Length: 295
Image (cartoon, rainbow, N blue to C red; front, side, top):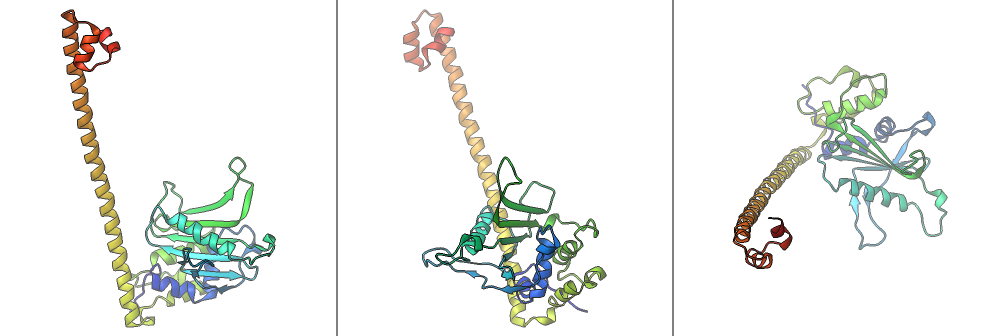
């Protein structure tokens, strides 16, 4: 019986989408928000996934897949296993770097081509029920006014459910491929195998296609993911507990402070009843003269 690996792992994701231009082309056309058929990608060529800055003192980074089409449009594809607060900033950084690296000095800005950043997240990060998030640079009051150049797509994989094949059929099939195929798969759904591109992508996941060293790296990848998730969960829990402790301490201090003030008010009232002056009572209790005057 055939055994499959999970396509979301670093090893498998880069093998499927970083070594087969026709597969990443089909995937991008299914995932990106092209409004017209003419906008779809015909073919791609791979670029170095390492985004190295001109200045060696600046930060460089490596993405999972980076390619471009005949029009010069660039596409960055990343598979992110866990959501962090800094991830959006990293995505913006990488896409911006790819955008500005198109031009040499003295070249017309009109020659700049769009950069699309497609980010698949095996985690949830928004309160929305939707799994698909499309970000553009828009004018706040008139969202139809757009500054073209950068476009960011984030897909929350845990929220995806294959509701219908009628609308965006290939998007549904590719997302089913990412979310349904793993080590527990014994029978791949026929509707996935019926599409030639996804059928080929499935064959890339067969365990027999990988060396022992690659399989060891694959297992280590999931161990690292599991450890990272545990550490993040532990840190969050520690933060919650710390917040509770600080809240209890703050509440106790507030209670003591309130109790002290009530006690001082009683003393001040007694002193005032004895006929002592407001200024003398204020000096003795530390209470404001205005409060004492109202007793």
